[in-house]
Length: 292
Image (cartoon, rainbow, N blue to C red; front, side):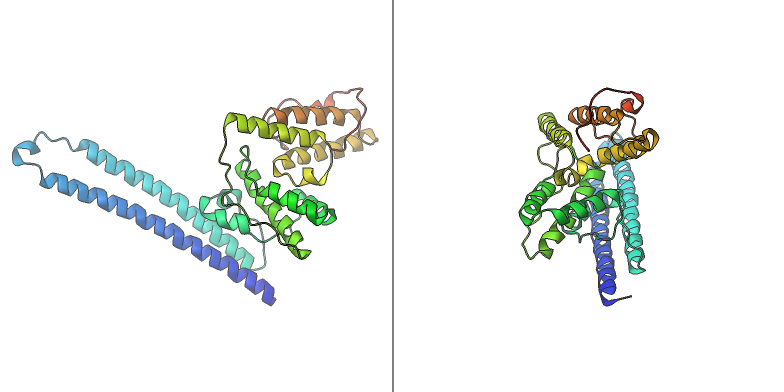
């Protein structure tokens, strides 16, 4: 293992140990809350006169303690599961088997700072990352700065998956900018949009639909919320062009239009989802005009 690989592995292990410490602190606080509740009960019992003891109903207090204990145990199980997954990824990385953190782990609030400042994954063969690496390398530095600011901006319609992907794409953009000797902007303070009202989500969906309708571009590949639609469209494109023996058969035009409608309505189509029936089997007479 090279010096660089050792450094990366040690950094991963240190990140995991830091997470363990934070989680243990949270568990300690949980235990302290239970102890405080117990002390409260003892204090209340000390103030009860012998004549009142028979009519004092302690059931609500005991039920409260039980409820808190159950909640804390569930929190503890979840936190320990997160710790185990993080340590497992760090161990795999130390042995040269790099892999992205599972979405459930990467989306944990305790990982937010890591997600925002993570190093670029330059070796992944995931379609979204590969396409964006290629698009970013061909873009100008000025364009990359614009793209990075957009990727930094939390979206009101982000899912856990697109939120994690957003900052993996941003890490690639940031690395490309630094590689050219330029200074990228600082990452945001949070990965979650402040305004997630219905109107904000509607505006965002309209923006994404317009980007999709505009066709293939670097901006399209740099948008995590459209990654699923691109995967779906590319899969249909390979299937239909192979079967029809022609470039961009009319069914793809219909599919492209239908996907735009779904995106504008707030849907985020992906391969294998349960959205409206695909138009792939429906022949149309529309002339193709977009690659994406």
